[in-house]
Length: 290
Image (cartoon, rainbow, N blue to C red; front, side, top):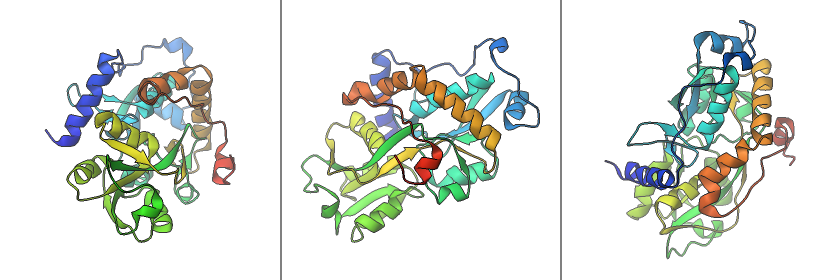
């Protein structure tokens, strides 16, 4: 078993020991409580098929990961995806969506939406549609205990690992142009490189890096926030009806306590921090407001 799978398994065991087992894939909500949508809409087509294909990460706990023992996909993004499926009365089918594949999966029609820690950016919004933000992460630096790296200014000349297709390619080019950038497909691929000294730091979203710290207490976050990363659900460009439907699902998920429950289950219990669901709109996010 690879080292990242062992780490994920350790996290799963921590969560299960705290009574946080995975939720069932089958939606049990009575059909009478689910509205029926016109067959010529995305929602109606999904209801006709009886399932919704959702792109998530399989190696980025606590937002999306596959339990190596039982095979179930779990995490914060997965909880959001289940809420969408429940609102349509269909079964969720989770598809792996690494950072560099997220937009191609949507454009090819291989998934109905992506919930894969995807930051809303104007550049991405030219290729796909987005919902309003459902989570706001922050860019941070992860290093081993005892590292001399204390912030972004100390990354010059250091080997820094991040994921291909993420916003951090540009962030590091702008904020640490003299860093030796190492790009990988999955964030889990950075971990063994950090442990064996091939790279000196990992840069990614704070919540994803927190998942790595949960697995390995010898790692720590350093420096100030590098960026703000508002996550949105990605969908096909121009599908305004589906975007409006998804925004409604997300609004209810935030308002009825499920967002807070999911945050506590996957993050708050480990970090001791509390956060509120984001309230800004997609338009304000793209304009850099909020």
